Image (cartoon, rainbow, N blue to C red; front, side):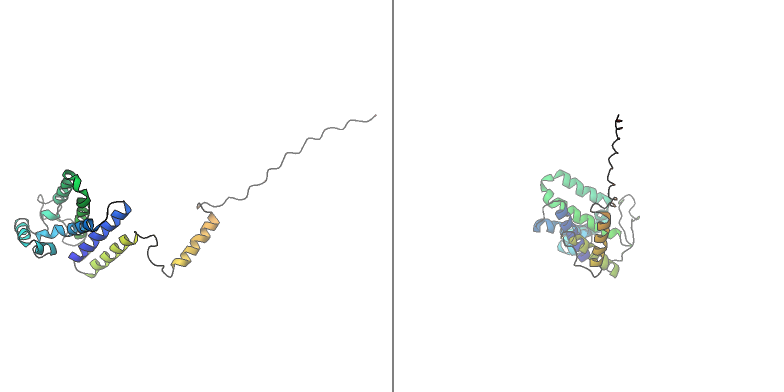
Length: 205
């Protein structure tokens, strides 16, 4: 579903740009979303396909759906464009990130991806754990996007009921083991000074 690709693509770029110091703005964010929709340009009824229907119809007629735009050849093409037009990295990197999230999501569906297109067009690579449009897809998208976005905030998620007891357990363990997480050594045994050798007293007389 287009909404799933948009959420995952946008959230991934939001996360990566924050964690790795890359520029995040509305234009780059839009490029990530466009990249997340781009592989489905080979389907005239897709969200992007309807926007550029003549081009989408032509691509679909020549290559079919989930053809060249869903293959390793497309990934190589994106990387080549990035290499040749390094001055536009500000837009190309988020676009490619969004593109790759789309392909990763499609690989988790039963239809899979024709990564070796056109060598083996009918052989698709898939890890079918999600059903397109099903509850599993919605749950996975929600959890993934939430995890990525939560990483941007120091506080993370609001406290759960068991979070405070867990912190108490951790604090008690740290008290016992020490701040560095190493068990405290027993207090040092004081070193006793060797007894002074008594000198023989001189005999009187």
